[in-house]
Length: 191
Ligand SMILES: [Zn+2]
Image 1 (tube, rainbow, N blue to C red):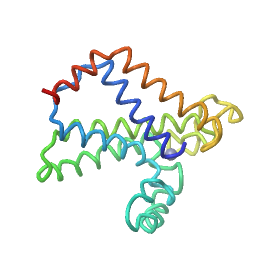
Image 2: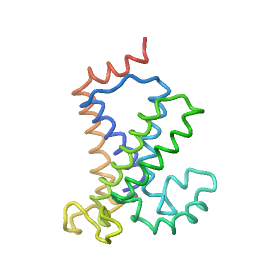
Image 3: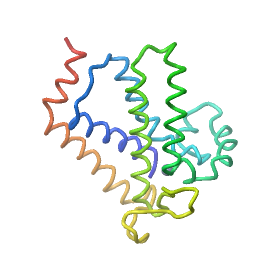
Image 4: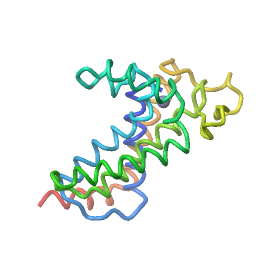
């Protein structure tokens, strides 16, 4: 999947959670930082790919990407696995705890949103031809459907013409059918 689809998938996961789960009250700053964390989380697993959108959006990112990538083993490796989820959840929790002394937002919510974005990335990649090595260091790649031929080609016509618009429709449907929930959530910030 391309970065744009991962961004939208991460947002869709958050939309679904707002629609269906009890949401704690949070400051506007927390909500804004949490939304950014969702999208960063949605792009983070691709840091094992030097051309990842996350690297391209940073100054000197492609150079850093090229330096970091060999350690993570190349595209769809450690950061695309259950072990990667554990490792990144541990690292991001500690990194955010360090930042929390200078940035006054609810870091637990920010961390949860980062992880939701991260996991949404792996779920989306599972539908692509390459599949996802969920059980890394075991080298098997898993995909849905199991037959590679029926899976989606990254950046291909199905992703652009079906998956991306499909996710937009899901967001619209969730917001429309739970509009009261979304209004109550936004009401915290609009007085
Ligand atoms: Zn990926």
